[in-house]
View 1 (cartoon, rainbow, N blue to C red):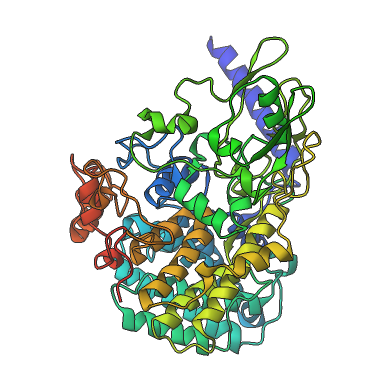
View 2 (cartoon, rainbow, N blue to C red):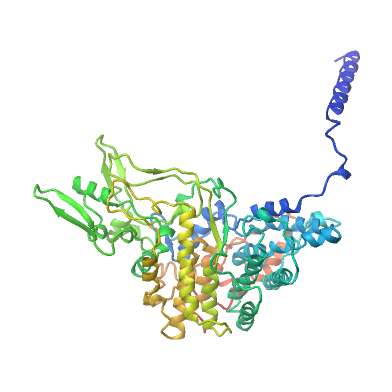
Length: 626
């Protein structure tokens, strides 16, 4: 380009730039004139960052936790690498997005003055119980966490880019302080509600937020029973004495971000493992209604059983023994219904926990090594496969899940393709009562008996799972297969609830160990949709327990995987030397006694190198420490 052309282009550019300035002059703003952020909207945005159980956690982390907890079995059966940690998900870093928003809200409120500050000040306290809940889950598998100095670069001078790691003991002190501050503020200040529906959890009902904060202290106390039981019981006594009260029926922390929010889009079917046969059988025997929503019905409904009979295909033995089949006068086998306990209970079957069970002939009707045992032919000669087993229910942990009801090979099956927003129950009155039952047995000064707390906890747990099933419109909740007249819904009735509560496993009529076992089993089942809390319960209680007559711990293998070969924490890896946090991170690992080099994935080390509050806890399956 010559000089004249360059000048001409420059002039044209200047004219264009001037034109742009003129065009946008009426909407450009002086930064000093920009209005302050709306704290109400910031709070709503903060709530949308509450995510303790995202896709990566369910796909990578929770699948292995379910197996370690002996609640589920890997698809295809457990193998001898089940206790090795390969890819890791997002667990351990869930709190930071919420912490970032909480710090911003605190900052904006700190800049207010006078009546404006008084009006909005309470908002910052509402987030504390949520921060504690998620931060505690992160710490449950890694110990030390960056919390008190995390996400503070914007508010520090010079910017704080290297936040310290808080020890787990320090974190517990910080979290109790935050919860106590929340309880104190919300119960002693006259509050003018400003959030209203911007608070899509409790609609700005600060009494429920105070209950939530007070109840959250129970989760902290539960983690302290093996490291400082005296303090744990003291915390529980404080909870019982607080004027804030605790969560009651109707106060559950139910999380739904919107009508069309589906939690996440990715399919996690591959991580929705088979139910453990020990757990499935235990729940069936005790008519535990939570089975019906936590797990899925199998494919062998009346129409499918009849199709197997029509094609003269052998039924799985455990299904055949419950099926009522009669031969008519024409010599045709007809399915007439189910023997006791009938639908829906006869549609739930689990798999064995033991390693390499899929290689054994005795389990062929579970793992189907030939690939043909559960297959029928369509009239066109195509294969149609059915599953006789029970898997985790995917739709109770994420929404917008299309489901096809099982049917005969040539039938046009019913489908559920309705879009529904996902509802997650993160914390509930059921959990409060089940923890109170434990602490009453351990000596806490509580107003009700341990039996009262256990009965109420189990009742509310059953109802919370039924509510989750209803809100998420999971398959079979209010609909049955049109071609199976014997099908039944999974909606919990008062009669079903009464049968469950009358079961022997809910009667505290034994020794201290026997009673604690019953309470811990109920906590264990209640945490089926929160595998981290279930993992915490299994570690701190030693339940399931070896030799139990209720729900026994079963060794995965007598030599390949004993209890000392099951990890008690997640593995950590050495950061790169170029990482600004290298020294801080290595120091955090070293102080906790964690291996972080080449041997960081040895299961026995991950069992012995424990986080602070887990150091004195019983080994897996050892039962509670009195």
